[in-house]
Length: 224
Image 1 (cartoon, one colour):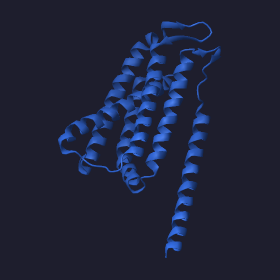
Image 2: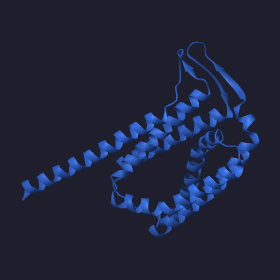
Image 3: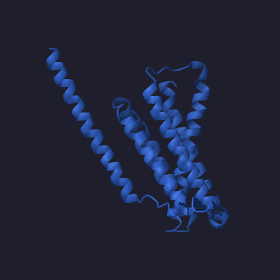
């Protein structure tokens, strides 16, 4: 994708996501009871058990989708040796990028909206919060993108953070579905655990980056 179109795609994708988040909020408020009602059960004896509702299925599949996306992009970074733009696929790339941005936002939104409903049932309070957070994402998106272009090594860190977010959602979905494997229930990853793992990843990445610069500097001195 051409560089001048990247900002347009980011803003369009986030803008559509804001609109769809507000729409999703309205739908969830109207149908929250049906989202929590069990729709089917799983009983494989001692191997696996569970009771699934729409909420648990959306969180499970959303988490799986994020894990798949992160793994695919990680393998892409490993395998690709050159980055080339294909003009013939440019329009398709723009559309697919917007779709991915919207889908990722909706996956993250669903569970956060249900969590917010525990604090307030006021539609307008939650809608304003969604719009404000979306505007903040639009304002910060270009700066984050510019930072990542100058510091490409942080792309790997971001993908692993995304991978952990997917695991957190899958564990949350398994907990909501009361999933048990061999008699052991699936426990959700707590927010404190997530932030601890995130902090460890950032520290490891910073230390690794400094150590790599030190090694490169030593190699440069030896070559000189």
